[in-house]
Length: 77
Image (cartoon, rainbow, N blue to C red; front, side):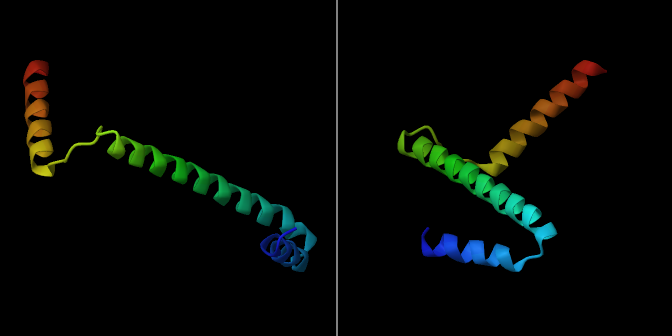
């Protein structure tokens, strides 16, 4: 075991037995979230490197969204 793993094991040993299972579940949950986040960041960076990302203009996006919303409301009336 490496030093970090040994420290984690010792920390778990300090906890009362009834708290250990929850602590381990929490650590696993956080590790899985980190793994997912890293994968999503990598996916985004790959998109940038492949040229699949364009500059985003919030004002233009909102203008188009409002225009589409207005057209949809007119059709349903």
